[in-house]
Length: 108
Image (cartoon, rainbow, N blue to C red):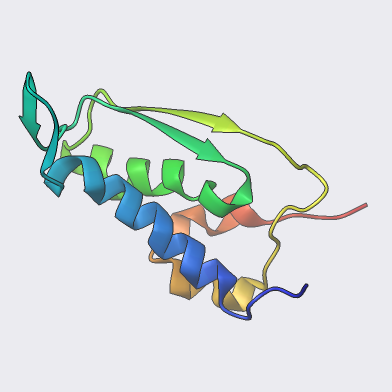
């Protein structure tokens, strides 16, 4: 019934792993296809748990010429819980400081 204290780090790592998976996992799911999917993909991000994925895509991949054609579809299922965390945890997210103001939220 309660959140883990390090949820922001857990879901940050989930997003980063999701971005690596299409490039490195060897997927033998078809007689017509074998190997990694590559970079021509669409990521589906759902709720706050994967909300960092577009930020990582832009800052860690597209800025370096990787995933140039990749897209993100972001779906919000539950707007009531937004996964808010202390700004002191921002350094754990492995994002450039320029993104810090994007996470500033004034309630009310």
